[in-house]
Amino acid sequence: MTEEDIQPDEVQDPDHIDYDYVPYGQIEHETRDENKPEVDFDEQARLTSVKHLFSKLDPAVVKAQGDAIGEIGLALRYRQDKELLMIRVVSAHGLASRQVARLSVDPQVEVKLLDSVDEDMIRTTIKKDSNNPVWNEILTFKVDEYSLEGTRVLFRVVDGSDVIGELMVPLDWDVLDGETEWFDLQDQRDWSIGGALHVRVKYTNPTTLHVNVASAEGLCGKDKDKLSDPYVRVTLAGKYPVKSTKVIKGTVNPVWSETFDYAIPVQLLQTATILLAVYNKNLIDSDDFLGEARISLHDYKHFHEIDNWFPLADLKHVARHRSEWSKGAVEQELREALVAHITCRSPNLIFNNTSNKNRVIRLSCSKAGQKSKLTIKDGKLIFD
Image 1 (cartoon, rainbow, N blue to C red):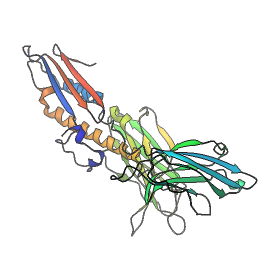
Image 2 (image 1 turned 90 degrees about the vertical axis):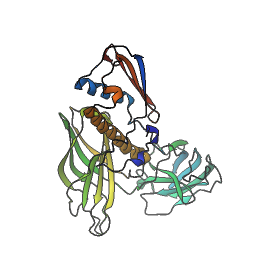
Image 3 (image 1 turned 135 degrees about the horizontal axis):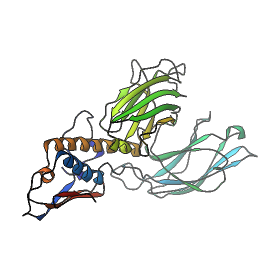
Image 4 (image 1 turned 45 degrees about the horizontal axis):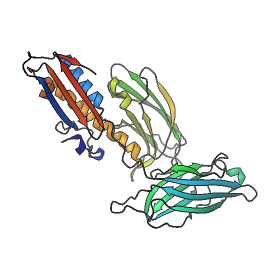
């Protein structure tokens, strides 16, 4: 099976590695001279050669699916004399259908003030068979000036019962200048989720990542008394076990101060993402989702400590964030498979004793859009 056959959704069981199911892509072996003395690599050379070959390939670079779902042009203005919020829905570009059998859409824009007592939603007209609709319609809301700043406006583009995409715009006087501005549409999410999570991250040699879940503030209250019984599920994106904090009863500002350790080589820190999901514990029904934070270690310096508050949001259905888990899973699967190959001194094209003193081994991965090669010249590894 080649890398082209691997899809992010196919990575399922975090506790099982099938070493026959590895996204190697295509391997080419080019012989330069078959009449040279035998070459034999020691264990360190084997390890170094494989790490070099596959680190240049970088199989974790997989494009996120479904990120481009369109953009919308909006112009917002506030009339103080009439306490009227005026929203011009101008047009949209590149709207994508959610149905496989359809290319065009019948878009309509739904607009709602999230923080208003008035729950009414105002809609534009429907534009038939258009992925680039033009409305130029003005929608108005009655809002007093004192509650205007900080009010959040939800814009949702729908195609019948399908949500194409949405975005939330917090109001301030810079936004309310009446000029048309373009916004990228996002995947649908629960905008009622709020609060923040206090997390500390530290790395200690040789291979331990410490994740300390300290506390949270401003969580959504799910009980009838507007409180929750929150706990946090923690893991690294990829094939790592999910760990959970204890449940704190009756609070929206819990304190846990619990630390979880993960074994991860320092070379892989920049590809790692920490996933932290907060839930409200229910005794009968399934637990309520209270929000999620994701900490990318792409720019993390392992000799420093992260100690920050991270806002919670509904990221469960965002394609860009789903792809981070998939990339981490594929990358870890490949890493563990390579350990097995190094231990068994296979594949033979790299590890066997050979009479070829000059060789080039090439590896390509069309999904990652990357290539790498390993050169053996006069019996020595050449890293380029």
